[in-house]
Length: 101
Image (cartoon, rainbow, N blue to C red; front, side, top):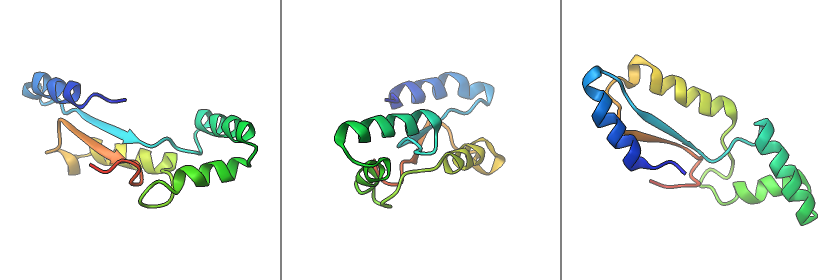
C-alpha cells in the first residue's frame, strides 16, 4: 500500500528542484497479466468463473467495474503532462471508487 506521507515528504524534498511527485492508486487492472492470473486462481479456488470473481470485486466499487490498464496509463499521462503541472504530493485515485478519498 502506498504511504501518502512518504509521497508528501518526497515532494517536499524534491519540489525545489521542480520535480513533482504523484502516486497513482489503482484497484488492480483485470486486464494486467498478473492480476488476470490471480483472479483465475482465486476463482478456481472459489469454484466460480473468472468473470464471476471479477464481478464480485467490481460490485464493491462505486462505478461497478475495475480500472483497465489503458485507464491507469491515461491517468499517468495526464499527471505527467503540463496540464497537471501544479499537482505534486498527491495521490491520483484510479480505483473506480473502490477507495473513496
